Amino acid sequence: MREYSEAFKGKVLQRLLMPNGPSANSLSQEVGVAQSTLSRWLREATTLDPVTKRRKPPAPTSRPIEQKRPDDRSASEKLRLMLEASTLPEADVGEFLRRHGLHEADLAAWREAALAALGGSAAVQARSGEAKRVRELEKELRRKDKALAETAALLVLQKKVRAIWGDGDEDTKPGSDE
Image 1 (cartoon, helix red, strand yellow):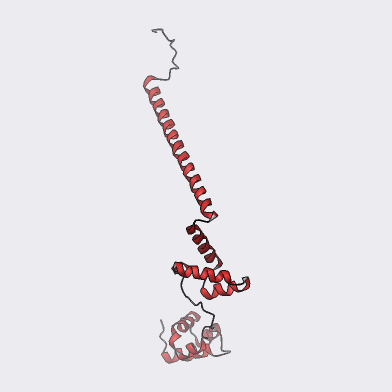
Image 2: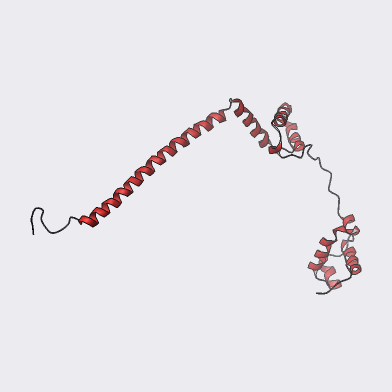
């Protein structure tokens, strides 16, 4: 593996980073260094001044006021955000959600949870009906499992009886000693 001086690396990187400079492929052919090596040097050179000057600073974005995940918020904070969002006109809700790092689904889930906690949600009644149906189905499944196990046990016993006593399809007539 060939070693290159830091000065050589610096000059090659400067040429690579020049505005309207050569591409990595053409520069690699020109200086006799593999293109993958040039790419590695470029990745490793993030601390060099030419590289850091070339990189653009991240564009300022409207960052969320609160950098919390929706699940990390307190109940009072969720309630405040729900109430604030409900007072906004429909056109401003999207900007509000972006500013606070939320999605419409977060607000809907919080609203449903609040209604469920207060006991006035149709979703809670639907869930309780679903839970009742699940319990009924589980009860029926247990009953059918028991019946199946009983039938399997009877079949096993029937096989054993036939093995011990025979099939009964013998040529002798019933009641005769022959």
